[in-house]
Amino acid sequence: MDDELFLNEQVKVLSVFGDGLNPCRPLRFRRTNGREVDVTEIGLRHPSARGKRMMHIFDVTDGSADYRLEFDAERLTWRLTREADHCDA
Amino acid sequence: MRDKYNIEPSLIMHVDLNSAFASIEQQSRPMLRGRPVAVINRRTEHTSIITASYEAKSLGVKVGMKFIEAARLAPGLAAVESDPAKYRFVYRKLMAILSDYSPNVVMKSIDEGIIDFHGVPLSCSLVDIGHEIKKRLREEVGCAMRCNIGIGPSRFLAKTAAGLHKPDGLDVIDATNLRSAYETMKLTDLTGIAWQMERRLNAVDIYTPLQFLDTDVVSLQKVVFKSIVGRHWYERLRGYEVDDRTSETKTIGRQYVLERRDLAYAEIAARLHYLCESVGARLRQQNKVARGVYVYVKTAERHYWHASRMCQMPFYSDSTINALAQQLFFSAPGDAREIGIRCYGLSDDGNPQTSLFGDILVREQQLVGAIDIINHRFGDRTVHSADTLKTSKFIKQKISFGSTRYL
Image 1 (cartoon, one colour):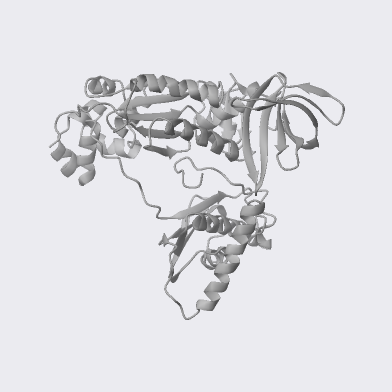
Image 2 (cartoon, rainbow over the protein chains, first blue to last red):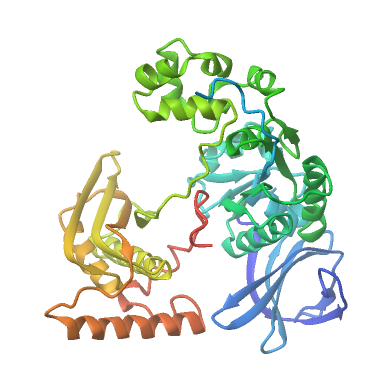
């Protein structure tokens, strides 16, 4: 049941800004421990307002685990907030 | 008398997301795709499942089942806690897609909407539009998203058609195939017929939708339903529109199943206080004022206790709702497992009649208004009662299936 880790980790993200329905696409991120994760698919991107501050939530995967990246549109920072490997699923 | 079937063209489309919350989770978390998934509201094994994916359903998992029972049926069942912000986003996406086809779109719940094409110039058939909506849903939300679409001359027939082939079906029911569609169904497959109603129909020898259809209006009105509801069913089954009406908000409430059975009175009262704040926020969001408060408790022995109070003056502040609720709750039984509160006697928040205590009311109005502005600016529950400080980690904002009022 508890296959999700709740995190609050500032990460460095390589992303492209283009056009279409998903103009911002994170491609790779580097965690504080130095590990780099290649994003193979963006599952869903949804905005979430924290008061007047807009966060863009990216649920992504690297093919072996699912991650949640949060982009703070006011501070222009990325945080890794969830990791789930579904190993008990 | 509408004895014949409705032969009007089929201009109502019902769109229903398949296993909505579970599909959205599988969309957002690709590692869950193809696996049995159960969406739950609380991370405990004894919680009930609010949505199951089709993979889980095929293994016998049902909505409402305890997770611990479901996990026995479906080994490897993944439990995912509900994520209202994500579901609201998909709801808005779905609404935006549907609104591209007609100005008359009504969202019946978070996962289903109705498009009324009356008066809309059509350049292609509704079946083609249905396929296009499915395609757009996959492109604009995600490849794991599927929906059932039903088309008919009335809301009821369109919804019935949407339920014929799950998942990802697209069906039309009109006067030409209405009987054959009913032939394949059980009474409880009809929207609005649950087991109690089924028993009532069985009592007058109606066991199938076809027998229901063939029952005359007088019997339905005078014998089965003993009211105008019988006539409505007679017309509804024949494809006439009787469900095109909006319901008025009569109560606003919230309930909470206690996380533990051994909570002290003060701890339960703090959770009730949290519910009162939540109800107050919803009340003001709807621009309503209430005159009554209703509190209930379900005990561990499944007894139902309730108390209510109607006031002369309307109210809407969290503190007033809480004061009234706590007074009522004082005489509640001790072994509570679920608590709930509802505000009733609702009316629009116009200028209330001037009171002798007008200055007190104005002060309260200003205070509540200021708190609402702060919470809107900095996020929900930025300012709240100190009493509820420790309750936020237990009680969370959840989404109800049946209403789109708070989305």
